[in-house]
Length: 136
Image: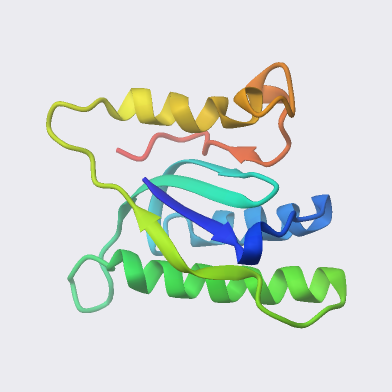
């Protein structure tokens, strides 16, 4: 699981969240096979599996994050007609241990907007995305 926050926990306006989610969707099956992603007002969660680069090696999480944060920051700034930093420098990645359930982590991400009181049902949150086709 990967998570990252906006600079100084700045709240993204709805059109900015859409720009971020669009970037995540573009990354799907190019650099990361995404299981689920949610763009919250001031942070993002993604669960996915690194794909292989042209060299045949898995794309590293830092490499994926650099590309995603850069592209999404440009998209947010363009959408909001502004300049400046969007994301905190740090990102948080979490590797599942053998005894942990991927399904439980996916449900954690899925329920994030509900726990925050943004919607009553996760499927009503417009910035939650689960690709229709399974990754495997």
